[in-house]
Length: 119
Image 1 (tube, rainbow, N blue to C red):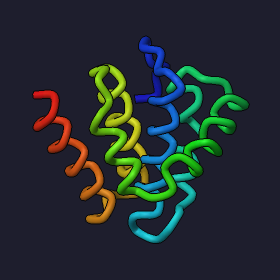
Image 2: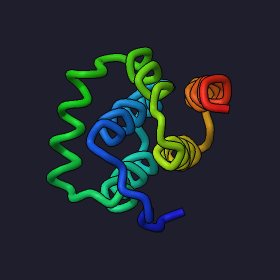
Image 3: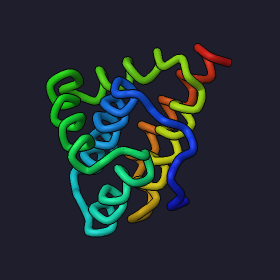
């Protein structure tokens, strides 16, 4: 769970990850200490420096200002390892303080959309 990925996501994939993390955190309308701890591990687990993560996260807010746009961008991701990493990190974030229905909905929509588009 806390391992660094052997896969290197590119900047587009990392921006989409940042936007989706924001979507999961805001889905239930609250940010818990456990979610903050999970979020703090993201740069390390994604194999990116904290400084680069902050830059990409700021860019993600501008490119994907809402969950719908982030999810649409995520569906188009071609690289399976990127989709797997994103799902794993989103899952761990949602699980960190106990799954909420709204958080689970984000995960289910992504999983189903990826299944339909990529098999």
